[in-house]
Amino acid sequence: MLEPLHGDRDLLVSAQTGSGKTVAYGLAFAGTLLGDRELFERAAEPMALVVAPTRELALQVQRELTWLYQFTGARVVSCVGGMDPRREQRQLADGAHIVVGTPGRLRDHLERGRLDLSVLRVVVLDEADEMLDLGFREDLEFILQAAPLERRTLLFSATLPKPIITLARSFQRDAVRLEVKGGDQGHADIEYRALRVLPREIPLAVVNTLRFYEAPAALVFCNTREAVRHLQALLLERGFSVVALSGELSQSERNHALQALRDGRARVCVATDVAARGIDLPGLGLVIHADFPHDAEAMQHRSGRTGRAGRKGISVLLVPGARRRKAELLFQTARVVPTWAGPPTADEIRELDQQRLVQSPLLQEEVDEDDLGLGRALIEAYPPERIASALVQLYRQRLPAAEEITDPGFKPLRREAAAFDRSPEPPSGEASFEQGAWFHLTVGRAKGADPKWLLPMLCRRGGITRQDIGPIRIFERETKVLISDRAADEFARAVHGTEVQGIRIEPMAGPGRAAKHARHRAAATKQGPKPGKNRG
Image 1: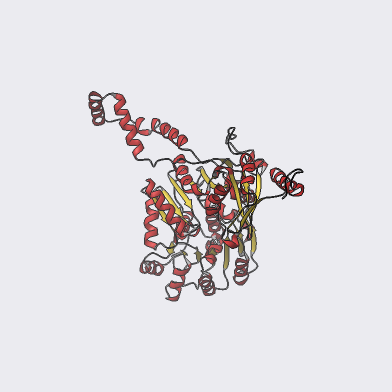
Image 2 (image 1 turned 60 degrees about the vertical axis):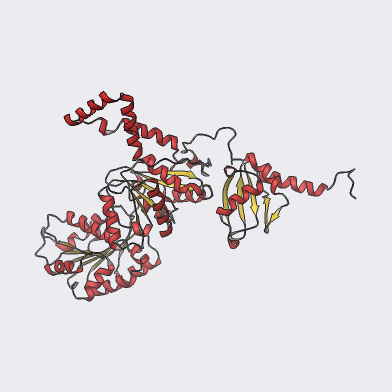
């Protein structure tokens, strides 16, 4: 990734999480630290400083650099929040070649005179955009100003917004700007899936997705602390072993949650983007986007937690009908083609449970004499079918129940995405939105329009079911809704000429069924009463 021809110059690198940048910059500054030597001299003041946004990422970097420099005699010390500062003080006093830490703790050691940067040769800012987002700008500037002017500064960031460019111009000299393109390779071990869901059934879709894939460890992303708390409570109620990570947790609570995931006591983690930054969970096989990522880069950051070290991973985006266009834009920007389908059904999960039980290692492994003796005693006391049924009951008791869930049935809007939709065509008689009609509502975001109350209102006033309502698109002063082909005529008749609490619903003029409804209404207005009718 980082060519030798860059020599000892500063670097400004745009690189995604999981792109191998820790090893890359570890190799990049090896020549600066070692020169022509193969071994380090006795450790004194640090020669390299790596700054990372979170405790987990900093400790991960320390482990990787320790592995990379294991045969050089390098001493790599960490200084991070949540750890004993006195122990870190003793380690720094004993000498270190490389120090890895978080901004706040590093600044604290500098201010107390525990960290000496006088001979520093290299500073690395890892995930600089995240450190600025977390409010560490002042700490970073303090650290960089404390470092010698004659040094290398390597700045790594997933994106290069204006604040990052400003920081680079202030503290780098003649930096080489590099962009590490992930291309298809960044997604080679990740299978993307887009699951159609009804908005109200998103938590149930999370339940069924977790049950369907049965990954050793799964990470579920929400956008707010409140959403994390709500989803964690729901999953706990359903019987999942689940922990939560959000900004409100103390460092001790965060450590306990991560340890539970690592030792297998918890299988599911519900987290916000910031709280999950830098965590590395072995065996993480599934990422679920319960809330939409803000952009394609955020989706890649989230998904990049799985599919590591040669293992396959699955990234699942739950897509309500009103957000499928944004979903397709995310996938297009990220240059991945997902498999579109409905959410896993309870029947599919029960069928998988049966297969998993039949193939269980418990039934394949050798059995010792004590267990065989107990088995023979059971066979003498009960019929084999009764014993097998008891085994099935015990197996099911440990599994959260699958939820009955609806597939909204909408198709991807892009043709190339539609080609990968493996779901069957809707049976005859089910709602179809291919030739559906768009209707206009005279209420928008400015007056508090929200699908939570718009959906039942449309059903009540139009005399239709929720399955006949497609995307609901809310704008500042208006809302547009797609009604299925089979219900459009009935809906148009029911809402024609009505206004409740200042909200009118009218068919939109344009191609397809909506145009037909508009033409019929216009024709009826122009014709007026038929001849022969009493106008009096």
